[in-house]
Image (cartoon, rainbow, N blue to C red; front, side, top):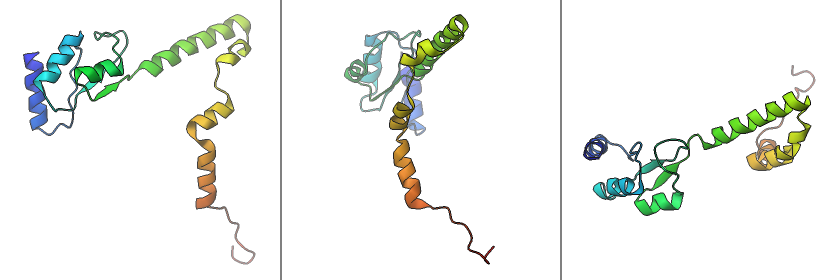
Amino acid sequence: MDGAVARARLYLEAGADAIFPEALTDAEMFRAFARALPGVPLLANMTEFGRTPPFTAHEFESFGYAMVIWPVSSLRVAAKAQNELYATIARDSSAAAMLPRMQTRQELYETIGYFDYEALDAQIARSALPSPGNT
């Protein structure tokens, strides 16, 4: 812990905007690190199957952390869903059984704000053909 805090102070002296202590293993370690660096924006890395127990964002906040990331959680969920999809296709020769678990086109468009971008495009630019004689 002492070495990690000393390195963090050096990073701050060098201009770091935030500090990310790696692989702390319990709540008290997170609290102790935050106590050693009062007022410093701290980042917690919540990656499943690592050394850090599965704390919530609220717990990290109570430990003194301003930021928490889940850098591979969505990838892990997506990879498992892909495994299930391909197992279904291998078993059924079809993906039809997976339809209830799939995002619809409408849900995708709502998620990414598709129609907002389409409307913005219409305001910004319009395709124009050259007039006869101006080609």
